[in-house]
Each structure stands twice: as C-alpha cells, then as structure tokens.
Length: 176
Image (tube, rainbow, N blue to C red; front, top):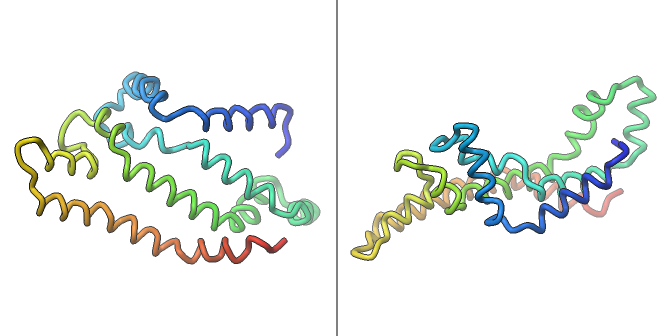
C-alpha cells in the first residue's frame, strides 16, 4: 500500500541488511534482558521473528503481483484486509515457504546467540549442546555424530514438506 514515507522505510530496512549481525548482538541482548526473556525459548527466538531479508523478499514478490487482481477485487467490493488474505496471501505461498526455510535455517544453525541468551544447559539449542561434546580433553565422536544427524533431520523434513512450493515458485517465475 502506498504511504508517504514508503521509500524511506524501505531504505532503512535495506540499510539494516548491511549491518553485520554481530554488531546487533549487544543491543539485542540488552532488549532481551530488559524484557526479562533471558534463559527462555522466546528470548532465543526473538531476533528471528522479523528479519530484513524477509521484508525485502516479500516486498519484491508482492510488487510483481498484477495490480489488475487488486483492482478487480476492489470493484467487487472487497476491503483491504479481504484483498490481502483472500488474494495476495494465497499467491505468496512460494516466497513464504522460502522465507520460512531461510528463517528456520538461520535460527536452527545459530550458535552464538543461543549460547549467550541460554544460561542453563536445559535451554541450550542443539548446536550449542553439540559443542559441549567436543572439548580439549576428549571428544565423544559417537554422541557428536548422532547429534549431527538429529540436527540435520528437521531441516530435511522441512525442506521436503515445502518442496512443492519451491517448485511452484520456480514454475511461476516467468509468468505474468
């Protein structure tokens, strides 16, 4: 939807994509601490709820949706929310699947943020727990490899579940 500072807001989102994630770690930790979310699952997941890459990906896809569809819905008497949920969102399944997989991979494979936010071992994520199995004194290779399989299986299952949306997105790329 057009609004006065649309390009400025998008420029700020694009500028935030240029900032390395490690630079944002201390401000994010301060926010999570002030919200009382240290050592909670929500505190670990909070930085992944909205990512600039997701805003960019969805904006670029939605810009390619033909305006005629929206205009036809308005002529039929549909409101903005109905247009969004009944017309735009069903068309956005391929980029939503892609965004879901990218976000899940970023959160699932992250090591540093969960190691900082999770204060007790019962809140560690799998990459942090795998690092515990490997230390200077000895490495438990059996546990390490079994843990690696456990880390990879959800990613494969998610990809296989969303594969039809990826194929649909590739197939509809050249169609206007």
